Image (cartoon, rainbow, N blue to C red; front, side, top):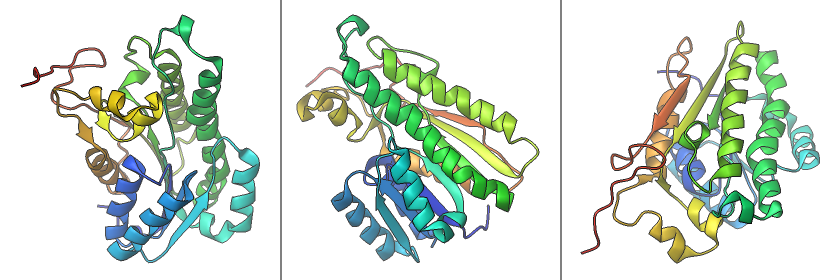
Length: 257
């Protein structure tokens, strides 16, 4: 297991997988940086992490689509970001689930700007510190949908396919350095992801009807495991499904009692 005590930086840290991952690293007594758009939720996660043992938790209300805000935050707190050892690119979302011909162009923009452009902004802003230190670990939250598309997933699937390709390219570009690059690609995970997608809690709940999905804690555990391997070990990619899910389109569901 890696013995590093460097800072862990998590985008999308206010809930779901991001918050669950932060709590695991807090138990390791790792300093944390958490970004998200929901400041109140960020502060709540930060308090839990401090209570669990994190020696410091820096939070910033940042939208990863906003490169100006990203650069300003890092300039203001450069010493904190220079100490980052692990970047977990977790911020992401899906909007809508209708056939492509019926989809809203504004939903396209939100998904592309968050899942792809935001990912690029944060990675490019942090990578110079990794290169200067000749160490670091990029952990990217992908999706099984990156390579196995599903009906009505069009732009979301495309953004995650781009993240997958960029992750592979980064691994090539950084070969010869001590920087590790990992992609974690989950299937169905019960977080507020579907609530954001549909804007309807009941419709989101129906996504998981009759089956047992993964939990945020399952993916957090996978991220933590991959990030704590010895420094010479790189987990390139992990695809994680719940047992009931064979692929992105085939899910076994029990009938309602």
